[in-house]
Image (tube, rainbow, N blue to C red; front, side, top):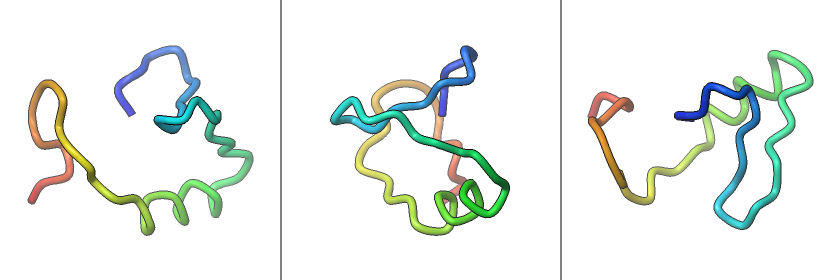
Length: 45
């Protein structure tokens, strides 16, 4: 979630669809960190 253009994509190119707050909360609860490519650890581990 580093983009400022309001469009987020999975690594396979599929666009994430956050049509409602429950969808976003589900995404946050079930996301999996694969690797930090650049920057700092925003997930707070």
